[in-house]
Length: 160
Image (cartoon, rainbow, N blue to C red):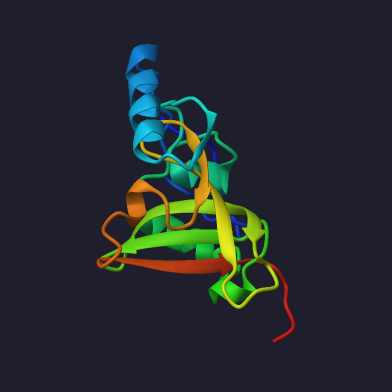
C-alpha cells in the first residue's frame, strides 16, 4: 500500500510503503558501506520506508520502484537534461544501467564550482542502507562505471 503521490500534472505515481526490518539489518549495511567507501558521510541510518527515488522525488515518504513512474515525473514536472557543468545545488543526478534508471540522488554541493571540472556532491539513499553524502563517482552505483551512464537533470527554469 502506497501513499497518494502525483506528478505536477496530476498523474498518479505508483509507490509502496514497506514495513521496517530489524534495526541490526540496517546497521550492518550502513557499517559495511561506510567501511567500503571511506570518503562518504552517513547522513542517516538505513530504513525500508523509502528508496533513493523516494528520497529524490517524494521527501522520504515512500518507495518508488518502477522506472516508468520516474519517467512520468521527469515529463510532467518538466525536467530537462543538462551537462555536468550546468548542474546546480538542488538538481538531480541519475545513474543508468543499460539505459534503465538504476539510482537517483540530489546535488547538495558542488566542489570546484568555477573550475573546468566541477565535482557534484550528492545526497542519496543506498538500497536498504542509509542516506549517504558522497562525490557523484564514489558510490556503489558507480562501481561498474564502464556500464553506468550518468545524467544530470533540472526542473529549474533557465535561459535557453
